[in-house]
Length: 447
Image (cartoon, rainbow, N blue to C red; front, side, top):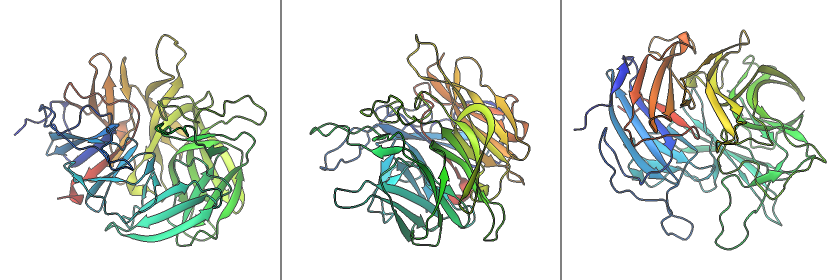
C-alpha cells in the first residue's frame, strides 16, 4: 500500500472526500502516492482509432486527516469534470462525456446523450439533478439550436428542450436558478477554420461577428424551449457564471446573475476573422479581444437588464458554494488575473492569487500564494457544522515554478487572506497548470 501524501499543517478532519482535477496528460496510467505510471487507454475518435489523450484526470482522496491516495488516468476531455450518479464524468469543450469510476477506471458512458454538450454542467442543489446544454451548429438547410437537458439524481435524462437560434454562438456557461435558465448570446459564430482533410478544429471553433447584438434568453426550466424571453444586453462575451438565483420564490422575482464579462470588438474595428475567439492557451490563459473580464451583477426583470460592476479587479474561474447553487448566496471566489506585459515571458496572462467576493457588502478580499506560485480555481467545501457559504474550506491547486510541481492548498474561507490551514504535496512529477476545472466529491456520496 502506498504511503499517504505528505502534508504541512493540519488537514481539517471534516474534509472527507475526493478532489478530482482535470490537467495535462503525462503518459497516462494510474499512480499511487509516490508510485509510477502504468498503462492506460486513450479515447476513440470518429473513425474508431485510438486518439492521443490531450489531458488527464487527477484524484486525491482525503480521509481522517490524511491524503490517503492519489491516482491519475489519461483522458481526451480537458475542460471540466463532475460527479453524477456514482460516476466521474469528464468533458471537453464540446462532445459526449467520458465516464470513469471513482478510482478513474474508464467505463462506457451510459448517460443517454446523443448530441454533444458544453463543458459546464450545473447541479441542482435541492434535487441533485444536473442541467446540461450544447449548441448544435446547423447546416445549409437546418437552423442551429441550443439544446438543454436535465438528468435526475440517478443519472437518467428526464427533460429536454430546444431553442432555435439565428446563428450558432459560442456559449460556455449558463445561469441556472430554481425555476429558470438564462443563456447568453455573444457576437460570435461557429467557423470551420480548417476545412482541409486531416486538419483539426481549435478547441473553441468560433470567431467574432462584430456588430451583432447582445441578448440574454430566459427559459422556464419545465418548458419546451418555445417560451424563451429575450432580453437585450450590451454586446459582450461571458465565459463563466459565478452564480444565479431569483430574488424571491414567486413568479415576479428578478433573476440575478454574476458573470465574468469580457469586452468585445465593435463594428468597424479591425479584427482577424480567420482566428478563433480564444487561442490554444485557453480561457484564463489568453487575452480575449486584448482584455480580461470583470465580475458584473446582472439583474433581469421582465425584458429589462440592469448591469453593475462588482469590483474593478480582473477575475476568472469563479465559483461558489455548491449547496447554494440556484439559490441566494453571499460569497463567491475566483482567481485574480492580469495582462502580462513582460514580453520575455511566453504567456499572455499573470495569475495574482485568489479573491473572495462578499456580494452582500460589495467587499473583496485577496490572497496571494507567494512568489513563483500560481493558484488555480478555488473549490468551496462547506464544513460539517457550516451554516453559511463562507463556513468551510477552499481547495486550490497551486503550481510552484521553483519546483516544477503542484500542491493542494487548504484555506479557511471564513478567515480568507491568512496562511493555509494545510498544504498537501503532490508527487514531484505532477505539475497542474492554471487551466481547466475540478470538482469535490463528498465521501457520503460514494461510501
